[in-house]
Image (tube, rainbow, N blue to C red; front, side):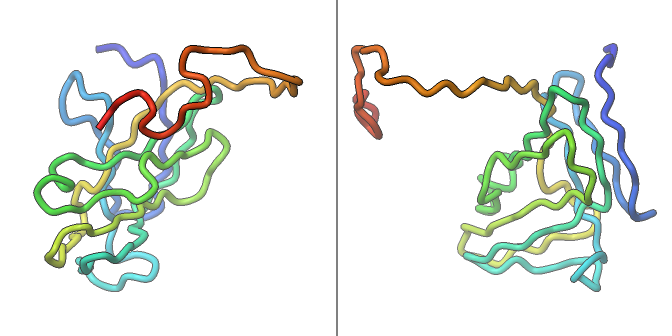
Length: 155
């Protein structure tokens, strides 16, 4: 598979694992925990139930202009352990050059141990459309109108 789009990655820690796709058709590349780093001084950290931790990845990235990085949960962590991302998807803007962190929340009933090198999230590189904001006196009518949450009959 040819890769015309380049994600430039700066390793901030020699122990950092570079983002990687796990299959040829994967939409997201896995992000890995880089421990010990920052506030963590061990090879593992325990994420207690109902707690949020910012886990360092030990890398910085340069996302191409016109794109964003969407940080998404890993389905296995979410379904097996209740560990997910509270602001999913998180956005990494093309002009951000700081260290990548992943906010994890444990919605499960048991503590979850995050170990150095563990794949904790996915990074999807996606195009961004920017719109011009135009103030108008009225909006066109639609069949749905102003119906909000649950107004289309979904359960």
